[in-house]
Amino acid sequence: MTANQAAHTVDIFIYESNVGHAIEKVVVTDSDIRSDRIRVAIRDLEKRFSKDVVALRGINLDVQEGEFVSLVGPSGCGKSTLLKLVAELDYPTSGNVARPGIADLPGSIGFVFQDAHLLPWRTVHRNVELLLEIQNLSVNERHRRAKEALAHVGLEGFEDAYPRQLSGGMKMRVSLARTLVLNPQLFLLDEPFGALDEITREKLNDDLVELTRSSGLTTLFVTHSVSEAVYLSNRVVVISDRPGTIVDEISVPFNERHRSLRNTQEFVNTCAVVTEMLYRGMEK
Image: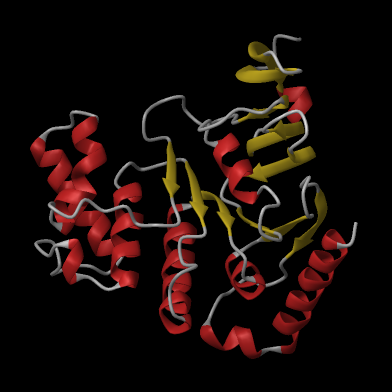
């Protein structure tokens, strides 16, 4: 490793038959990841849940700074598992995940789950402040960040409402705001809009596009919806049936996002390409 090559050290779990897991430190240099704009670098990743159950195999993927990448694939293919591996909520069996340029500090990674997971006894404002309380930020700083985040997601005027008084879409907005107050460098979302009606989902898609583009957030997004993936993303990664492997990566050709885009022939054609790759992944 030369003097100009910064090293990024990550924890890797190595599978040892039926014995268990051991931690090994793997050094990933800048020459391995080949770009100072890469914020997620996944190399030869495999994840086993047992000797016979392989969730992911041979995953290689880079995500650039400011890029929005969606992961699509059939149920059980390992999309959510991959997201958790990137967040270090779980660890690979072999291979490695590096996050060059992402600070190893609380709040540097924001994770939005499928369910809003709001605390029913706390108001909207106090739910959004929760993670800042855990970080022991001052009351004034917590209040300022929560107010700004709620404004970003269009919930001004609902600060004193309780979760039981909110619609499903409003609850997901609170969940987004709770993550945004952390000022994350990396934004991970695991099917956050899957349970919502189509109109609410499309409106939140527009809000998410505005949030991520205006802030330059590096984003990984899991969804079962091909049209949602194409609308939101710079790139769509198609994952095969288990064991999940990358079938293809489709670049999305649109610069601007607007409601009428979904009715254009180019959008329909791009969705058709992604759908075809999904079928190929299920037939492997």
